[in-house]
Image 1 (cartoon, rainbow, N blue to C red):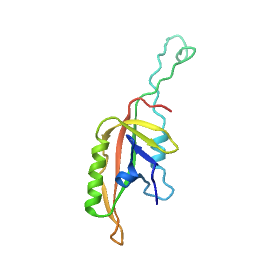
Image 2 (cartoon, rainbow, N blue to C red):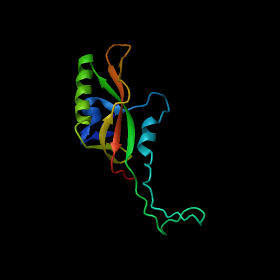
Image 3 (tube, rainbow, N blue to C red):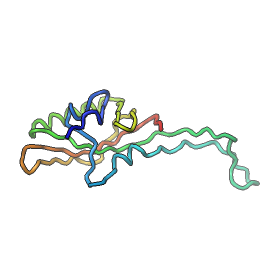
Image 4 (cartoon, rainbow, N blue to C red):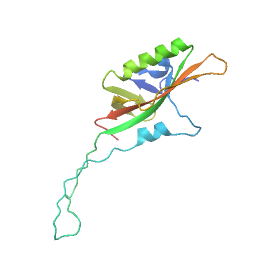
Length: 148
């Protein structure tokens, strides 16, 4: 499996550098796609509310502006040994927590986001053959100035 070029973080290919990719835990799952395609909430539009009238009045052409949005992405990371997996994981966490990130997802767009939280503990796995070592983890990011 070659996932080169599918996920770039600040220009670094997550697959070639860390053995990492956006992954799903169920066949046909779409947790990451849902997070990446979710629209942010619109900021409040100034309204005029007269007691004597039904509803509220809006400007003729409301200027809709988007608020920031949180996006939680689910990653798998693969190593060739326990030490290799831990090294890649620590280096990837260093990158993810380094400040504003340009996260380019193939066939989507580039998301400018910043780390906020790891909502659950990482889950560590080993293949039955004992030759591949994985970690599954989720990261919550904030996209402060989202675009469509």
